[in-house]
Length: 331
Length: 142
Image: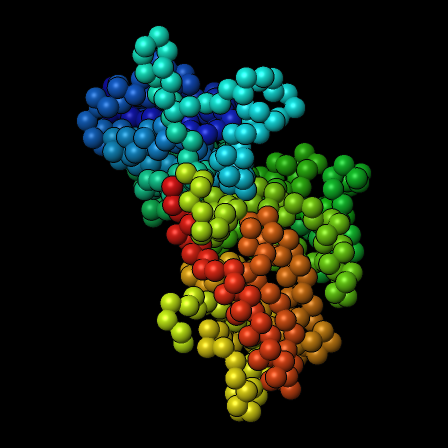
């Protein structure tokens, strides 16, 4: 028992897909179980926070943490796991870059709570009940975690050693990353594990069909065009973020008839994925007339933040919607 | 400089061939323009990656002014067209991020010293009215 690698898995603001990514290892899980002892995994093993608290510091070899940091509870748990772990790995797009939950940073906390509890078409809440941080039930005070002002990526809260990219990370990537971690030969801190250091186009089968120079008169969305699956999607006018996205996923989406949406995040040394993606789109739009270019962009690019920052808004240079330096309202 | 007045920090990206020469002309012609501008010379406005604009804002600039050759006048033929398309996209993104008022694109030719002074004064006064940005501070506060 004692020579096994002690591993913890935890989820924060996530959809559960990253937990599934572990299960997707299928028969490799059995081999993994011979080398690894799972000491904490709330989704599969009944353990409480207090069980982790009782562990000696740095007694967990690797903690895999997925999900964005949305609640004070997440902050508390990841800080605890950081203290108890030798190595912390941000697992999946949300922990790596903020992920889909990070798009909530385009709205204030008040706007989100109001919409979710009062205004959403599927909500029935005639008494206008809103969540409170402290509630009294039968004379007892109950506490709920606090919703943070902004969603954060894991490394904006604790020190992170490695990253495993993807929404969710494909089994091959998880396997490669685990092999690296279990080999004992650890790469430099901050490395992205299991993925490539080149852009997705580099490994894409359709790259051969990509023209030397792409110039687009109009952009189409996937539902507006019948994609030829044997020809570069960009050449067909569908925005594929492959050129600015880290490779290593095996072009799964592209093989499935969908363009890359960028879940593996930026290549090394890129500070702001969205700005790069935007810049790249600007360079392939074939318009030199100011009025025309403005019109086309207005028409076709309805939601640039959603396109370019789909997985990375919290890790962008701006981090979300700026709400003025005057008001301190959004606590 | 009057006491206590907010003095914006404005980063200006100026292309080597037209805009920087235009700014230079303002200087040699002794035309006054606000001291708030920090001019960064680049070979072409097409070199200004949106990342540079966002980084300037994140690192303490209150506004960013991108300047380049008028359409048709680019030394590298098409650099400024790229800038223009990028700017429209960036502007739309900045709108979602609540920062669209903080960035502007202007064409300044090598002979437009006076126009530069007008543009710079106008933009600095515009940013002064908006007030300090303090982006990093605001976005990292709880």
